Every structure is written in structure tokens, then in C-alpha cells.
Amino acid sequence: MTVEPRPASPTIYSPELAGPTLLYIRDGGIETPSFHNANPFLPHKTLACPALSFQRRPCLRPVVRSPRVASLPPQTTSQRPFVAMAGSLHGQIIESLTPGRVFGSLFFVFVGLLVLDHIWKPTYPENIPVVGYGKGTLASVQNFCYYVFRYRDWVIEGYQKYNKQNRAFIVPAAASRAPDIIIPRSLTRWLLEHPDSAVSAHEAHNDVLYSDYNFLGKVYADDVWHTRVIHKSLARHLSSLVPGIEEEVAVAVDKAFGTDTENWNTLSLWEAWLTIVPPVTNRMLVGEGVCRNPDFCRAMVSFVDQVILNCFALHMVPQIMLPIFGPVITLPNWWMWRKAAKHSLPVIRRRLDDMAKKEAGDPAYDTWVAPEDFITWDIRMAKAEKNHFELDPCVISKRLLPIQFAAIHTTVITGHGIILDLLSSDPAKGYIEGIREEAARVLQEEGGRWTKNGLSRLYRLDSAIRESQRLSNFSCTLMERKVIAEEGIANEEEGWHLPKGTFLTVNLEGLHHDDDLTPNAREYDAFRTSRQREEYEAKPQSERTLEEGLRLKNLGMVTTSDAHLPFGHGRHACPGRFFVAHELKMVVANLLLNYDLKPISQRPKPQWIGVTVIPPVDAKIELKRRKGTV
Image (cartoon, rainbow, N blue to C red):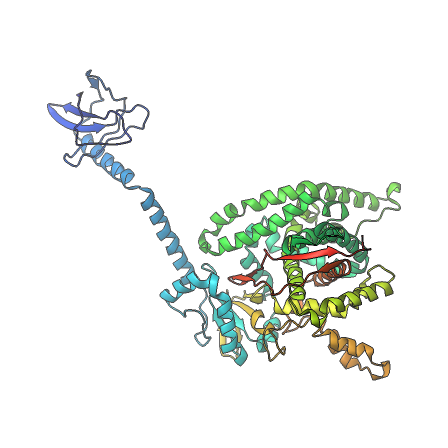
């Protein structure tokens, strides 16, 4: 068998080939045309010619582009049809794989997996009404498309139509998540009475936050060790933490707002709070040395930002694909943790060593006292429970991550909202002057340094923060719970049976803006609760009643109820809320005592993406340091 090159037909053109050659293969007197690529720098191909039926064969040797004859291995008659068929099929497949077809196929696979997600979602009772575009395939597509922009509208609509009539309703969720059942206020106690083995807050939070991926491992998602540490130690050490927090607040406020007493300065309020909250929060978590490290704080803020972005992305990923996409999408989390761990790990290792030497009776440590922060509390509890895994420095550093997520941005959003609410209020109402007077008076009575008792007596500031939390909530719904009991749960009065996998939540947006619960609910009244408390304090002791005192005490910002939910409610309410209250009070008091601020004509409006608020981060304020305060 021989091969002769002949000139290519002028009707055949391929822009990716240089000098194509048409080869005629002779075998037993039979000529078979085959069109080959003559460019030695490109992979060998056989091209299709619309006018001829070519026999495609794999090129076993380089194609000769000269008049010489090249020899090819002989083929038997039985081999030729099979090789021709395989080569033809291979060529057709390669030629059909255009970018458009590849992406189109992937898109249809993606949509198909989302459809499977929809099919596998738990089936909710038919007697629970649905907001949004209803049920069915077309409605599900519309709900998916409009969830990001209309979720808050659906929550408000459902509250007026159903929750106000003590009925629950179903609201669509993101593409890959099951819809939420939003229960009315009347069913809050019923929900909270279920044991964690039947209705789980932890499982719901893991699903919403994709904790298996965002917090660097399933072990950190499954075990709420960090929450137990905070529950056990934070409240009992809060009084001793106040001096350190006050010191950190003073440093951070000076850095964020400046010390210029002559000129008015315009600055970003959001960036100012991002400068203040991370170091103050981390004074409690990692101690004085690390909390002031700007690289550590930036890494933690970036980590929190990345978790939020990841959640939005993973909401759109079919559940069956999460084990593939989850680790990939959350790769930046590892990078942020490593950047932060460079600064926290040396402190953790040194603390482990110091505490071990103290326990061993090393004379050099007779007077040494472990700093009261999360690192110490974590080590102390791990040793008490003989949990060697939790004594690993890397494990301790990773336990900080979910606390950073819970503490930083929620506090920044709240503090940002407080200042905007105060500055956009009518100056004639005297909110800023009233808070400033109270803070100066109480601080003087406490000897010029804040104490836990003094902070608890800031009734006006407490009321102003609580009112801002109510009016400017950071989420449409809260208190997410997931049914995990195999048999589901039932409510006989409502005629429900909710299967395993059902998500339930409470209507934060509706409850906080209900005129029947809060008169003039859309108005910011900074002293809404403090008036009652100040009137009670002004009464003679003989006219005060225990019942009234307890009722007014429950109006504090850290006291939760079925109508006041910024920190949740029940046994899973935020364990760090007392620290956050002290932190916010000291920051706002420091700001108002040391700075003059110009009012703003109108409060900038936030935006909403799904369930989450996007604050007006571009809002700017004008302020000047008061003379005599530097």
C-alpha cells in the first residue's frame, strides 16, 4: 500500500491549517481519498469534505508533504470498516464540540439538577398559603428569578394577609433551598418548646450559612464548641472585660474619626465602624496584642465578607453539586484564615505553654494570671473536659471564625444604623443632646471610667439602640429552625404535619413594624422606652412596684421577646448580646461626648437582596472633635 500526495481541492479551506494535503491511499488497486493537515505544528486531523465521503484513519506516521511516497502499515480487510467507523465517529464528536454547545449542555444539566432539587424538597401541607408567584413549575421559575428582589415584599405581604390573622404562610427561598414557613407570633412559643432533637437551630444555621464549607470543615460545623465556650465564660467575666473594652474603644474611635478640633471632616460612616468594631471585638477574643494588628483585623473582615458572598453563590448551586462546588467556592476562606492565623497562632501557642507551666507549678509563673479572653476560656474548658482535639492551636484559631462572622458585621450594621437614625431625626427632639447629657452624668458618677453598673444606667442610649434595631432590622426573618425529627412535627390546632427538612422562621420585618405592637412603628423615637424607665426611677421608693420594675427591665435592648427579636429569642438567643450592648454603648457615648456632628436631612435608604439588608455604605457624615477632649 502506498500514499501519494496531490494538490488540495481549492474548494476546501481551513483557516487553522497551513498547506493542507489530499492523500490518496492505494491498497490492492483501490484508491481512497483522505484529506490531512500538513501543518507540522498542529495536531494531525482529517478534515471533512462536503463533496466526498472520506475514510478517516489515525495518522501513525508524519504526513509527507513531498512527491515522495510514504508507506503505511498494511490493514486487513476486516480492520478497515471498524477503523473507518471509529475514526468517523471521533471526528464528528470533535467537530460538534463548539463552545456554544458545551456551555448549552452544561446549562441544561444545571437546570436539570435544580429541577431535581425542587422535586426532592419536602412537601408542605396544602392548607398553608403561599406568597410569591404560587406553586407549579412556571411559578417556581418566577420565584427563582424574583427571589433576590422581591423577598422582602413577599414577607410584608404575608404578614398583613396571614400572620396578622395568626396564620403561617410559605415564602419562596433561593434556588437550591427549601421554602420557609413563616409562622405568626402566636406560634412562637409552640416552635421554641420543641427539643433540639426535633427542631434544630444549629442545623438550620448550618444549611443557611453552608458551615461545612465556609468555616473550614465539617467538624467545626457539627460541633458548637465555640458557642458553649461563650455561653459558659463570657457573661461571668463581662465586668472584668469592661476596662479593656473601654481602652480599645478610645483608641479605635480616635483612629476612625480623628482628633481635629478646628475643621469639620467628612468621612464614610461605614468605614469608620469597620475601623472600630473588629479591634474592639477581638480584644475580647484574642487579647490586646493581636486585636490592634491591622493585618489580622483586615483578614477577619475579609473572611466575613467572603462568607457572605459564598452564601449568595452557594444558594444557586444544586444540592447534589455542593460537595464539588462548595470546597472550590470557599477556597478564599482558607487564604483569609491563613493570613489571620499568622498573627493569632503564636499567641495561642504561647498561651497554651504559659497555662501548662502555671498548672505544673513553675515558680516563674507564681504571679502570672491568664488574660480573660476567648483563647483562655477555650483552653480552660478543653482541659476540664479532657478534649485534646480542642487544644490544638489550629483548631482554636478556626473556632474564632464563626464568632468573627456573628460579631463583626451585625455590630457594624447596628452601629451604622444608630448614628444615621440619630442624625436624620429632627434636632428639635433633642435626642443627641439628651444622650450626651446622660452619658456625661453617669460617667462622672462612676468616677470617670465605665463600669457594668454604669452602662446599665444609660437608659436613653439603651432605648436609642433598641429603637434603631427595631426600625432598621438587618434581616427580614430570624430564628431559623429546621425539622430534623424523622417523623416530622405536628400542630393539631392548625391541622399541620411538617415533614423532616421543613424550614420555619419568624417574621422580623412584620413584627418590628406593626402599629398594633408599636405605635407609630415607622417613626424613629429614640426615647420610646427610656421615658417610662426614667419616670419610674424618679418616683419615690414607696410608689414603685416590683411588677412595674420587672416590666420596665424587660424593655432593655438585650431582653428578648416574641415581639423584639434582633438577638433571637429562647434558649438559642445570641449569647454575646450583653457584650455587644456594652460595646455599642461605649462607642456611641464616646462619639457623642467627644465630637460635634452635623445633622443630615434624610436617612439614606438601604437595599435588600433576598432576606438580607445591604446598608447604605456610601453614607457620609460631617463631624469635628470637641475642644478640650484631646
